[in-house]
Image 1 (cartoon, helix red, strand yellow):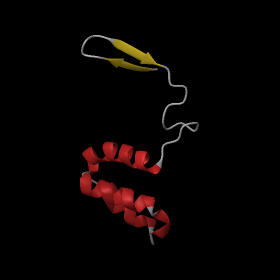
Image 2 (cartoon, rainbow, N blue to C red):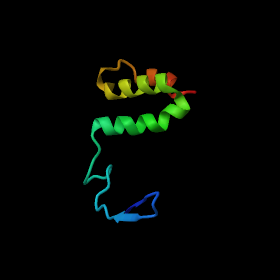
Image 3 (spheres, rainbow, N blue to C red):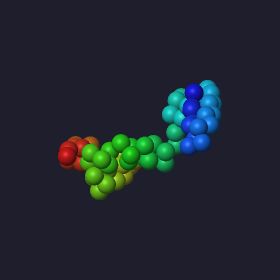
Length: 74
């Protein structure tokens, strides 16, 4: 269920059979990147977060996966 409470006090409920991120309703790459940014930026900062997302999105081109370690530390 999604519930929205308006300032006026009005409530709206909606049943979502397959919420975003489930196998039946997967997120696209842009949505996954945005979710990752929202979770990682407060911890890693914007620069490291953007670098990490870029490298993970191009993992097949990365010469050494070990290079990600530096981006995962605070």
